[in-house]
Image (cartoon, rainbow, N blue to C red; front, side, top):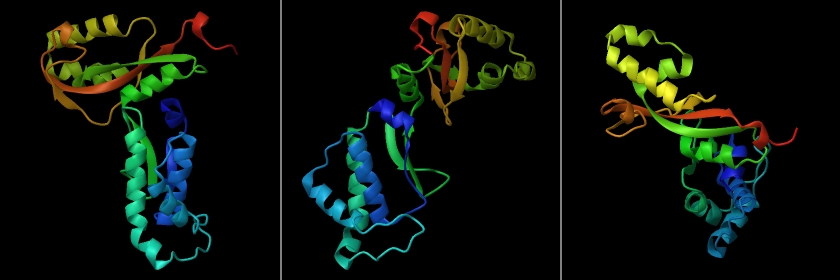
Amino acid sequence: MLLAISQAPIVSQDTLRSDHLCSALIREADRLEIELDRDLWQPAAAIAAHGRKPGQICLSLPPKLEEIGSEIVQELFTELNWHAPSGCSLGESEVDGALFLWELTPEAQAEAINADPASRFEAMTLSVPSHWLSAIVNGDESSFDCYGDAGDYRAYKAFSKGELSGGWSVTSTAEESEFSKSHDATGYGVLACDVTTCIAMRLKPESARPAA
């Protein structure tokens, strides 16, 4: 299920009509082989039956279905999220209120990459001091010159050698950071600080890559 979610994260877009959303959410439940309770499926299917593709002329929902439409949509979201793998959540995009998609934590993204037999890459996650990101992601070490902490620079270099050797490269980072006493740089002498979870990837060894 995690692999299916990561490969097709968008569930619905360009509409807020409850009939369109019910139709999209029922399809998603079928795709992920989630069996909906009959008491939820029946009204959801009745609402979805009135839907048309966005942009086309649509019939108005009967009053009874209109009344329960938003409630049924919310129940469908709850049901899909209940069955989703850890690290996945279905909701609306922060930048587009009419875009509904699966959002995966970095840990779930890495797990999906590693679970894909067709992938030529392997992935891992690292919790990294946030003030190291420009250096780790872009190779820009100029930030260390700004605050002149030689010990922190040595810790960063040791971390890079210890955790990112062997072809690993950080490819993406979480949008938010959090303050933590324990992180992947703790063993290199870095104390509690704001940290950001990153995904690092590398090519699989040749023997483990899928055939071309």
